[in-house]
Length: 124
Image (cartoon, rainbow, N blue to C red; front, side, top):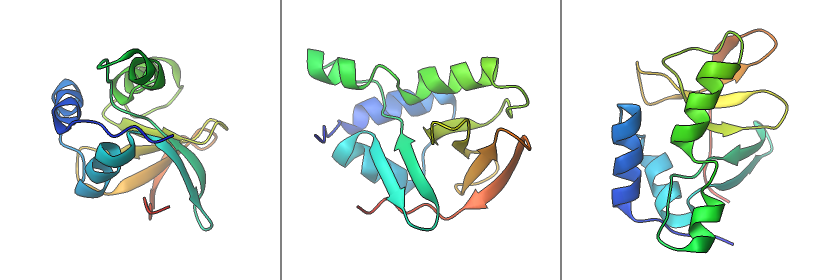
């Protein structure tokens, strides 16, 4: 079930992470605050929400929020770029990240410990 989120919560996450999100990510978060991305070309990903404590259901749904998950990946994933922000993961050890240099999305591969561009579509 989709849980829209107020833009102020997105701004709070952006402030905590030190950068703004690309417009398409912001729009997806405002409409659904996380969820799955099933792209025939790019695979199946779980999009991290932003933290929302406006009620108990939203609090539980946003427990694995983008700020917390970015901190976890930075501290626990061997070879993970310390300036990357994790926006999604595939449950196989790979992540979709934002790098500080631009608004493009990249896949960080846990085996090669490298990033490469990904064309991420947020449409259902």
